[in-house]
Image (cartoon, rainbow, N blue to C red; front, side, top):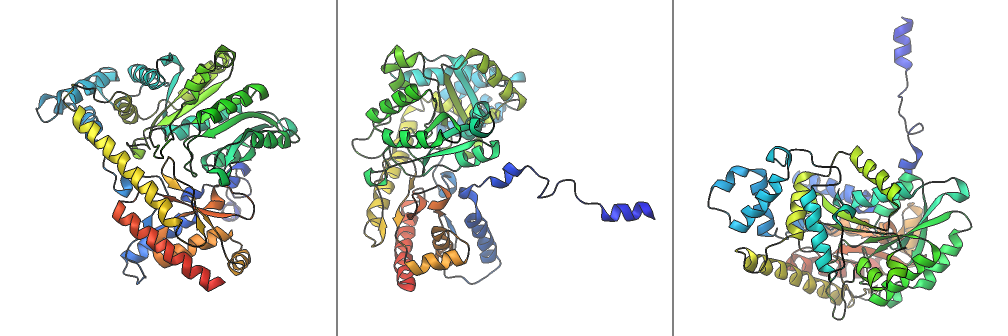
Length: 489
Protein backbone atom coordinates (compact mmCIF):
# COMPACT_ATOMS: atom_id res chain seq x y z
CA UNK A 1 0.00 0.00 0.00
CA UNK A 2 2.73 2.48 1.01
CA UNK A 3 4.79 1.52 -2.03
CA UNK A 4 1.87 2.14 -4.40
CA UNK A 5 1.19 5.44 -2.70
CA UNK A 6 4.83 6.42 -3.14
CA UNK A 7 4.77 5.44 -6.84
CA UNK A 8 1.60 7.45 -7.33
CA UNK A 9 3.08 10.69 -5.97
CA UNK A 10 6.43 10.34 -7.65
CA UNK A 11 7.43 13.38 -9.74
CA UNK A 12 9.42 13.35 -12.98
CA UNK A 13 13.21 13.40 -12.62
CA UNK A 14 13.47 15.83 -15.52
CA UNK A 15 11.07 18.77 -15.34
CA UNK A 16 11.05 22.27 -16.80
CA UNK A 17 12.44 23.46 -13.42
CA UNK A 18 15.19 20.82 -13.15
CA UNK A 19 16.36 20.82 -16.79
CA UNK A 20 19.43 22.65 -18.12
CA UNK A 21 18.46 26.35 -17.86
CA UNK A 22 20.63 27.27 -20.87
CA UNK A 23 18.51 25.10 -23.18
CA UNK A 24 15.41 27.11 -22.22
CA UNK A 25 17.15 30.28 -23.45
CA UNK A 26 17.80 28.80 -26.90
CA UNK A 27 15.68 30.27 -29.71
CA UNK A 28 15.86 29.34 -33.39
CA UNK A 29 13.53 31.54 -35.42
CA UNK A 30 14.11 29.81 -38.76
CA UNK A 31 12.11 26.83 -37.42
CA UNK A 32 10.20 28.72 -34.73
CA UNK A 33 6.48 29.35 -33.96
CA UNK A 34 5.67 30.60 -37.48
CA UNK A 35 6.89 27.37 -39.02
CA UNK A 36 5.06 25.26 -36.44
CA UNK A 37 1.85 27.10 -37.37
CA UNK A 38 2.62 26.56 -41.08
CA UNK A 39 2.82 22.80 -40.46
CA UNK A 40 -0.59 22.90 -38.70
CA UNK A 41 -2.11 24.84 -41.61
CA UNK A 42 -0.77 22.25 -44.07
CA UNK A 43 -2.51 19.53 -42.05
CA UNK A 44 -5.74 21.57 -41.98
CA UNK A 45 -5.61 22.00 -45.79
CA UNK A 46 -5.08 18.23 -46.22
CA UNK A 47 -8.09 17.58 -44.01
CA UNK A 48 -10.19 19.75 -46.34
CA UNK A 49 -10.30 23.02 -44.37
CA UNK A 50 -11.31 26.05 -46.47
CA UNK A 51 -8.59 28.72 -46.62
CA UNK A 52 -8.08 31.73 -48.91
CA UNK A 53 -5.13 29.79 -50.45
CA UNK A 54 -4.48 26.23 -51.61
CA UNK A 55 -0.93 25.65 -50.36
CA UNK A 56 1.61 26.88 -47.83
CA UNK A 57 4.69 28.36 -49.50
CA UNK A 58 7.68 28.01 -47.20
CA UNK A 59 9.95 30.92 -47.99
CA UNK A 60 11.37 30.75 -44.46
CA UNK A 61 14.39 28.50 -44.90
CA UNK A 62 17.28 28.14 -47.36
CA UNK A 63 16.27 24.64 -48.45
CA UNK A 64 16.97 24.72 -52.18
CA UNK A 65 15.74 21.28 -53.23
CA UNK A 66 12.53 21.57 -51.21
CA UNK A 67 11.88 24.69 -53.30
CA UNK A 68 12.40 22.86 -56.59
CA UNK A 69 16.10 23.48 -57.35
CA UNK A 70 17.42 20.48 -59.29
CA UNK A 71 20.37 18.46 -57.98
CA UNK A 72 23.58 18.49 -60.05
CA UNK A 73 23.50 15.26 -62.09
CA UNK A 74 27.18 14.35 -61.61
CA UNK A 75 26.96 14.65 -57.80
CA UNK A 76 23.99 12.31 -57.61
CA UNK A 77 25.57 9.82 -60.03
CA UNK A 78 28.68 9.51 -57.86
CA UNK A 79 26.54 9.16 -54.71
CA UNK A 80 24.41 6.48 -56.38
CA UNK A 81 27.55 4.56 -57.29
CA UNK A 82 28.95 4.92 -53.77
CA UNK A 83 25.65 3.76 -52.23
CA UNK A 84 25.22 0.80 -54.57
CA UNK A 85 28.66 -0.23 -55.93
CA UNK A 86 27.13 -2.97 -58.12
CA UNK A 87 26.24 -0.10 -60.49
CA UNK A 88 29.97 0.24 -61.25
CA UNK A 89 29.68 -2.95 -63.35
CA UNK A 90 27.09 -1.50 -65.79
CA UNK A 91 27.30 1.11 -68.56
CA UNK A 92 24.64 3.57 -67.32
CA UNK A 93 27.14 5.97 -65.71
CA UNK A 94 29.96 8.05 -67.23
CA UNK A 95 33.54 6.96 -66.59
CA UNK A 96 34.53 10.09 -64.60
CA UNK A 97 31.67 9.48 -62.12
CA UNK A 98 32.79 5.85 -61.72
CA UNK A 99 36.41 6.92 -61.21
CA UNK A 100 35.37 9.34 -58.41
CA UNK A 101 33.18 6.69 -56.75
CA UNK A 102 35.93 4.06 -56.84
CA UNK A 103 38.39 6.46 -55.24
CA UNK A 104 35.97 7.31 -52.43
CA UNK A 105 35.00 3.65 -51.84
CA UNK A 106 38.66 2.57 -51.68
CA UNK A 107 39.11 5.07 -48.83
CA UNK A 108 36.15 3.61 -46.88
CA UNK A 109 36.40 0.70 -44.43
CA UNK A 110 35.34 -2.48 -46.24
CA UNK A 111 34.76 -0.41 -49.39
CA UNK A 112 31.42 0.81 -48.01
CA UNK A 113 30.07 4.27 -47.19
CA UNK A 114 28.21 2.48 -44.41
CA UNK A 115 31.48 2.23 -42.44
CA UNK A 116 32.74 4.80 -39.94
CA UNK A 117 35.48 7.09 -41.20
CA UNK A 118 38.33 8.78 -39.34
CA UNK A 119 36.91 11.38 -36.94
CA UNK A 120 38.48 14.29 -38.80
CA UNK A 121 37.06 12.93 -42.08
CA UNK A 122 38.27 10.61 -44.87
CA UNK A 123 41.87 11.49 -45.68
CA UNK A 124 41.53 11.64 -49.49
CA UNK A 125 38.48 13.91 -49.12
CA UNK A 126 40.49 16.25 -46.88
CA UNK A 127 43.26 16.25 -49.49
CA UNK A 128 40.72 17.21 -52.17
CA UNK A 129 39.31 19.98 -49.96
CA UNK A 130 42.84 21.32 -49.41
CA UNK A 131 43.51 21.31 -53.17
CA UNK A 132 40.18 23.08 -53.79
CA UNK A 133 41.00 25.83 -51.25
CA UNK A 134 44.49 26.23 -52.74
CA UNK A 135 43.04 26.65 -56.25
CA UNK A 136 40.31 29.00 -55.03
CA UNK A 137 42.85 31.22 -53.24
CA UNK A 138 45.31 31.49 -56.12
CA UNK A 139 47.90 28.99 -54.90
CA UNK A 140 48.16 29.88 -51.18
CA UNK A 141 49.15 26.55 -49.57
CA UNK A 142 46.55 24.54 -47.67
CA UNK A 143 47.44 21.66 -45.35
CA UNK A 144 44.92 18.74 -45.25
CA UNK A 145 45.78 18.36 -41.53
CA UNK A 146 44.08 21.72 -40.93
CA UNK A 147 40.85 20.48 -42.55
CA UNK A 148 38.09 18.99 -40.41
CA UNK A 149 35.04 17.57 -42.18
CA UNK A 150 31.75 18.19 -40.41
CA UNK A 151 28.01 17.58 -40.34
CA UNK A 152 27.19 20.68 -42.39
CA UNK A 153 28.87 23.95 -41.37
CA UNK A 154 26.60 24.30 -38.29
CA UNK A 155 28.24 21.40 -36.46
CA UNK A 156 31.73 22.84 -37.04
CA UNK A 157 30.68 26.31 -35.84
CA UNK A 158 29.24 24.91 -32.60
CA UNK A 159 32.38 22.80 -32.05
CA UNK A 160 34.66 25.85 -32.31
CA UNK A 161 32.41 27.87 -30.00
CA UNK A 162 32.64 25.02 -27.46
CA UNK A 163 36.43 25.30 -27.51
CA UNK A 164 36.26 29.08 -26.96
CA UNK A 165 33.84 29.29 -24.04
CA UNK A 166 35.27 29.53 -20.53
CA UNK A 167 35.34 31.76 -17.43
CA UNK A 168 32.73 33.03 -14.99
CA UNK A 169 31.07 36.40 -14.38
CA UNK A 170 33.05 39.24 -15.94
CA UNK A 171 35.58 36.75 -17.31
CA UNK A 172 32.93 34.81 -19.25
CA UNK A 173 33.78 34.45 -22.96
CA UNK A 174 32.13 37.06 -25.18
CA UNK A 175 31.59 36.35 -28.89
CA UNK A 176 30.94 39.18 -31.36
CA UNK A 177 28.17 38.40 -33.84
CA UNK A 178 26.58 40.57 -36.54
CA UNK A 179 23.06 41.93 -36.10
CA UNK A 180 21.06 40.81 -38.04
CA UNK A 181 22.63 37.33 -37.58
CA UNK A 182 21.85 33.75 -38.48
CA UNK A 183 20.19 32.41 -35.28
CA UNK A 184 22.52 29.40 -35.07
CA UNK A 185 24.96 31.81 -33.40
CA UNK A 186 22.63 33.20 -30.73
CA UNK A 187 21.23 29.70 -30.09
CA UNK A 188 24.67 28.10 -29.68
CA UNK A 189 25.92 30.93 -27.43
CA UNK A 190 22.82 30.63 -25.21
CA UNK A 191 23.25 26.87 -25.02
CA UNK A 192 26.93 27.22 -24.06
CA UNK A 193 26.26 30.02 -21.57
CA UNK A 194 28.54 32.45 -23.43
CA UNK A 195 27.96 36.21 -23.81
CA UNK A 196 26.57 37.46 -27.13
CA UNK A 197 28.23 40.74 -28.19
CA UNK A 198 26.13 42.40 -30.88
CA UNK A 199 27.62 44.62 -33.57
CA UNK A 200 25.21 46.20 -36.04
CA UNK A 201 25.51 46.05 -39.82
CA UNK A 202 24.77 49.37 -41.56
CA UNK A 203 21.40 49.04 -43.30
CA UNK A 204 21.68 52.49 -44.89
CA UNK A 205 24.88 51.35 -46.64
CA UNK A 206 23.70 48.02 -47.99
CA UNK A 207 24.32 46.18 -44.69
CA UNK A 208 28.04 46.96 -44.79
CA UNK A 209 30.34 46.40 -41.83
CA UNK A 210 32.17 49.32 -40.24
CA UNK A 211 35.15 48.78 -37.95
CA UNK A 212 34.12 51.75 -35.77
CA UNK A 213 30.93 49.81 -34.94
CA UNK A 214 33.03 46.73 -34.06
CA UNK A 215 35.08 48.91 -31.71
CA UNK A 216 31.95 50.41 -30.09
CA UNK A 217 30.51 46.94 -29.43
CA UNK A 218 33.83 45.62 -28.11
CA UNK A 219 34.42 48.51 -25.67
CA UNK A 220 30.84 48.26 -24.32
CA UNK A 221 31.21 44.48 -23.85
CA UNK A 222 34.53 44.71 -22.00
CA UNK A 223 32.59 46.08 -19.00
CA UNK A 224 30.82 42.76 -18.42
CA UNK A 225 32.65 39.92 -20.24
CA UNK A 226 35.90 38.90 -21.89
CA UNK A 227 35.56 39.30 -25.71
CA UNK A 228 37.54 36.52 -27.39
CA UNK A 229 36.03 35.82 -30.81
CA UNK A 230 34.61 37.70 -33.80
CA UNK A 231 32.14 35.99 -36.17
CA UNK A 232 31.67 37.23 -39.73
CA UNK A 233 29.06 35.91 -42.19
CA UNK A 234 30.09 36.66 -45.79
CA UNK A 235 28.09 36.64 -48.04
CA UNK A 236 25.57 37.67 -45.39
CA UNK A 237 22.67 35.70 -43.97
CA UNK A 238 19.96 37.06 -43.58
CA UNK A 239 21.14 40.31 -45.19
CA UNK A 240 22.63 39.20 -48.52
CA UNK A 241 25.57 41.63 -48.57
CA UNK A 242 29.00 40.75 -49.99
CA UNK A 243 31.97 42.28 -48.19
CA UNK A 244 34.59 44.24 -50.07
CA UNK A 245 38.24 43.23 -49.92
CA UNK A 246 39.03 46.46 -48.06
CA UNK A 247 36.42 45.65 -45.41
CA UNK A 248 37.92 42.17 -44.87
CA UNK A 249 41.40 43.69 -44.45
CA UNK A 250 40.02 46.15 -41.88
CA UNK A 251 38.36 43.31 -39.96
CA UNK A 252 41.57 41.25 -39.92
CA UNK A 253 43.56 44.26 -38.64
CA UNK A 254 40.94 44.84 -35.94
CA UNK A 255 41.07 41.16 -34.87
CA UNK A 256 44.88 41.33 -34.71
CA UNK A 257 44.90 44.57 -32.66
CA UNK A 258 42.22 43.36 -30.24
CA UNK A 259 43.58 39.81 -30.00
CA UNK A 260 40.38 38.14 -31.22
CA UNK A 261 39.86 34.66 -32.69
CA UNK A 262 38.27 35.06 -36.16
CA UNK A 263 35.40 32.85 -37.37
CA UNK A 264 34.52 33.28 -41.08
CA UNK A 265 31.22 31.72 -42.12
CA UNK A 266 31.62 31.51 -45.92
CA UNK A 267 28.94 28.97 -46.84
CA UNK A 268 27.43 31.22 -49.56
CA UNK A 269 30.75 31.82 -51.35
CA UNK A 270 29.40 30.82 -54.80
CA UNK A 271 26.21 32.86 -54.34
CA UNK A 272 27.36 36.30 -55.53
CA UNK A 273 25.07 38.11 -57.96
CA UNK A 274 25.54 41.88 -57.90
CA UNK A 275 27.72 43.62 -60.46
CA UNK A 276 31.00 44.79 -58.98
CA UNK A 277 30.72 42.32 -56.08
CA UNK A 278 33.18 39.47 -55.69
CA UNK A 279 33.79 36.86 -53.01
CA UNK A 280 37.14 37.21 -51.21
CA UNK A 281 37.98 34.45 -48.74
CA UNK A 282 39.27 35.60 -45.35
CA UNK A 283 42.17 33.17 -45.69
CA UNK A 284 43.31 34.62 -49.02
CA UNK A 285 43.17 38.21 -47.76
CA UNK A 286 44.93 37.20 -44.52
CA UNK A 287 47.86 35.66 -46.43
CA UNK A 288 48.07 38.53 -48.90
CA UNK A 289 48.47 40.92 -45.93
CA UNK A 290 51.82 39.30 -45.16
CA UNK A 291 53.42 37.33 -42.31
CA UNK A 292 52.68 40.03 -39.70
CA UNK A 293 49.07 38.82 -39.93
CA UNK A 294 49.22 35.42 -41.64
CA UNK A 295 51.57 34.00 -38.98
CA UNK A 296 49.58 35.24 -35.99
CA UNK A 297 45.84 35.78 -36.56
CA UNK A 298 43.85 32.69 -35.52
CA UNK A 299 41.24 32.03 -38.18
CA UNK A 300 38.74 29.27 -38.81
CA UNK A 301 36.62 29.34 -41.96
CA UNK A 302 33.54 27.24 -42.73
CA UNK A 303 31.95 25.92 -45.91
CA UNK A 304 29.07 23.56 -46.64
CA UNK A 305 27.40 21.49 -49.37
CA UNK A 306 24.00 22.86 -48.32
CA UNK A 307 24.01 26.16 -50.21
CA UNK A 308 25.49 27.70 -53.40
CA UNK A 309 24.48 25.84 -56.60
CA UNK A 310 24.50 22.45 -54.79
CA UNK A 311 21.72 23.01 -52.26
CA UNK A 312 22.29 19.51 -50.84
CA UNK A 313 21.14 20.34 -47.27
CA UNK A 314 19.97 16.86 -46.34
CA UNK A 315 23.38 15.23 -46.81
CA UNK A 316 24.89 17.38 -44.02
CA UNK A 317 28.30 17.80 -45.62
CA UNK A 318 30.74 20.55 -44.64
CA UNK A 319 34.25 21.41 -43.55
CA UNK A 320 36.30 23.91 -41.59
CA UNK A 321 39.91 24.98 -42.03
CA UNK A 322 41.83 26.08 -38.93
CA UNK A 323 44.78 28.45 -39.28
CA UNK A 324 47.33 29.41 -36.59
CA UNK A 325 45.53 27.29 -33.99
CA UNK A 326 47.64 26.46 -30.94
CA UNK A 327 48.89 22.86 -31.50
CA UNK A 328 47.77 21.80 -28.01
CA UNK A 329 44.26 23.14 -28.70
CA UNK A 330 44.22 21.32 -32.03
CA UNK A 331 44.80 18.05 -30.16
CA UNK A 332 41.75 18.90 -28.01
CA UNK A 333 39.70 19.78 -31.12
CA UNK A 334 40.53 16.39 -32.65
CA UNK A 335 39.50 14.71 -29.39
CA UNK A 336 36.22 16.66 -29.31
CA UNK A 337 35.22 15.68 -32.87
CA UNK A 338 36.13 12.05 -32.15
CA UNK A 339 33.46 11.88 -29.42
CA UNK A 340 30.88 12.06 -32.23
CA UNK A 341 32.73 9.32 -34.14
CA UNK A 342 32.60 10.90 -37.61
CA UNK A 343 30.53 13.14 -39.89
CA UNK A 344 28.00 11.30 -42.14
CA UNK A 345 30.04 9.45 -44.76
CA UNK A 346 27.57 10.09 -47.64
CA UNK A 347 27.94 13.80 -46.81
CA UNK A 348 31.73 13.43 -46.99
CA UNK A 349 31.41 11.69 -50.38
CA UNK A 350 29.20 14.51 -51.64
CA UNK A 351 31.66 17.13 -50.37
CA UNK A 352 34.41 15.34 -52.24
CA UNK A 353 32.70 15.73 -55.62
CA UNK A 354 31.78 19.35 -54.84
CA UNK A 355 35.47 20.19 -54.34
CA UNK A 356 36.59 17.82 -57.12
CA UNK A 357 33.97 18.30 -59.88
CA UNK A 358 34.35 17.20 -63.51
CA UNK A 359 37.37 18.80 -65.23
CA UNK A 360 37.58 20.05 -68.84
CA UNK A 361 37.91 17.05 -71.15
CA UNK A 362 36.05 14.65 -68.83
CA UNK A 363 32.74 13.20 -70.12
CA UNK A 364 30.55 14.96 -67.50
CA UNK A 365 32.17 18.41 -67.73
CA UNK A 366 29.80 20.09 -70.19
CA UNK A 367 26.61 18.96 -68.42
CA UNK A 368 28.07 19.95 -65.03
CA UNK A 369 29.05 23.47 -66.18
CA UNK A 370 25.68 23.97 -67.87
CA UNK A 371 23.72 22.94 -64.75
CA UNK A 372 25.91 24.96 -62.36
CA UNK A 373 25.80 28.12 -64.51
CA UNK A 374 22.07 27.87 -65.08
CA UNK A 375 21.29 27.41 -61.33
CA UNK A 376 23.39 30.43 -60.35
CA UNK A 377 22.01 32.52 -63.24
CA UNK A 378 18.41 31.83 -62.17
CA UNK A 379 19.26 32.74 -58.55
CA UNK A 380 20.81 36.02 -59.74
CA UNK A 381 17.63 36.86 -61.69
CA UNK A 382 15.47 36.06 -58.65
CA UNK A 383 17.69 38.22 -56.40
CA UNK A 384 17.21 41.16 -58.76
CA UNK A 385 13.46 40.52 -59.17
CA UNK A 386 12.90 40.38 -55.39
CA UNK A 387 14.66 43.68 -54.76
CA UNK A 388 12.85 45.34 -57.67
CA UNK A 389 9.33 44.27 -56.66
CA UNK A 390 9.73 45.04 -52.94
CA UNK A 391 10.97 48.55 -53.68
CA UNK A 392 7.75 49.35 -55.57
CA UNK A 393 5.69 48.81 -52.39
CA UNK A 394 5.10 51.90 -50.20
CA UNK A 395 6.30 50.97 -46.70
CA UNK A 396 8.79 48.29 -47.83
CA UNK A 397 12.45 49.03 -48.59
CA UNK A 398 14.85 46.34 -49.72
CA UNK A 399 18.62 46.57 -50.11
CA UNK A 400 20.16 44.89 -53.18
CA UNK A 401 20.49 41.13 -52.68
CA UNK A 402 24.21 41.04 -53.57
CA UNK A 403 24.67 37.40 -52.55
CA UNK A 404 23.43 34.41 -50.49
CA UNK A 405 19.76 33.36 -50.84
CA UNK A 406 17.65 35.85 -48.90
CA UNK A 407 16.20 39.32 -48.93
CA UNK A 408 15.78 41.13 -45.61
CA UNK A 409 13.40 44.02 -46.39
CA UNK A 410 12.52 46.69 -43.87
CA UNK A 411 8.81 47.18 -43.29
CA UNK A 412 7.12 50.20 -41.74
CA UNK A 413 4.23 49.16 -39.50
CA UNK A 414 1.33 51.38 -38.39
CA UNK A 415 1.30 52.39 -34.69
CA UNK A 416 -1.99 50.54 -34.11
CA UNK A 417 -0.48 47.26 -35.35
CA UNK A 418 2.52 47.74 -33.06
CA UNK A 419 0.19 48.32 -30.09
CA UNK A 420 -1.94 45.29 -30.91
CA UNK A 421 1.17 43.09 -31.19
CA UNK A 422 2.38 44.29 -27.78
CA UNK A 423 -1.01 43.52 -26.22
CA UNK A 424 -0.65 39.96 -27.58
CA UNK A 425 2.89 39.76 -26.20
CA UNK A 426 4.30 39.42 -29.73
CA UNK A 427 7.10 41.26 -31.53
CA UNK A 428 5.40 43.54 -34.11
CA UNK A 429 7.07 41.80 -37.09
CA UNK A 430 6.05 38.40 -35.66
CA UNK A 431 2.44 39.68 -35.51
CA UNK A 432 2.80 40.80 -39.16
CA UNK A 433 4.32 37.50 -40.38
CA UNK A 434 1.71 35.43 -38.50
CA UNK A 435 -1.11 37.41 -40.14
CA UNK A 436 0.58 37.04 -43.53
CA UNK A 437 0.72 33.27 -43.04
CA UNK A 438 -2.94 32.99 -41.96
CA UNK A 439 -4.19 35.13 -44.88
CA UNK A 440 -1.90 34.10 -47.75
CA UNK A 441 -0.21 30.80 -46.78
CA UNK A 442 3.23 32.41 -47.17
CA UNK A 443 5.69 31.49 -44.43
CA UNK A 444 8.40 34.12 -43.72
CA UNK A 445 10.61 34.69 -40.67
CA UNK A 446 10.25 37.94 -38.70
CA UNK A 447 13.32 40.15 -38.43
CA UNK A 448 13.14 39.96 -34.63
CA UNK A 449 14.32 36.34 -34.93
CA UNK A 450 17.64 37.57 -36.38
CA UNK A 451 18.07 40.77 -34.37
CA UNK A 452 17.58 44.31 -35.69
CA UNK A 453 18.00 47.89 -34.55
CA UNK A 454 15.46 49.00 -31.93
CA UNK A 455 12.34 50.43 -33.59
CA UNK A 456 12.98 48.84 -37.02
CA UNK A 457 11.04 45.85 -38.40
CA UNK A 458 11.99 43.36 -41.10
CA UNK A 459 11.32 39.89 -42.43
CA UNK A 460 13.63 37.37 -44.09
CA UNK A 461 12.42 35.77 -47.30
CA UNK A 462 14.36 33.24 -49.34
CA UNK A 463 14.67 33.86 -53.09
CA UNK A 464 14.56 30.08 -53.74
CA UNK A 465 10.97 29.43 -54.98
CA UNK A 466 10.76 28.75 -58.75
CA UNK A 467 10.53 32.06 -60.66
CA UNK A 468 6.80 31.75 -61.48
CA UNK A 469 6.02 30.93 -57.83
CA UNK A 470 8.33 33.68 -56.58
CA UNK A 471 6.41 36.22 -58.68
CA UNK A 472 3.16 35.06 -57.02
CA UNK A 473 4.76 35.25 -53.55
CA UNK A 474 6.06 38.78 -54.17
CA UNK A 475 2.67 39.92 -55.52
CA UNK A 476 0.83 38.40 -52.52
CA UNK A 477 3.23 40.02 -50.02
CA UNK A 478 2.76 43.35 -51.84
CA UNK A 479 -1.06 43.10 -51.66
CA UNK A 480 -0.95 41.92 -48.05
CA UNK A 481 1.29 44.81 -46.99
CA UNK A 482 -1.06 47.32 -48.57
CA UNK A 483 -4.18 45.84 -46.94
CA UNK A 484 -2.41 45.40 -43.56
CA UNK A 485 -1.33 49.04 -43.63
CA UNK A 486 -4.89 50.16 -44.45
CA UNK A 487 -6.42 47.93 -41.78
CA UNK A 488 -4.23 49.34 -38.98
CA UNK A 489 -3.68 52.96 -40.04
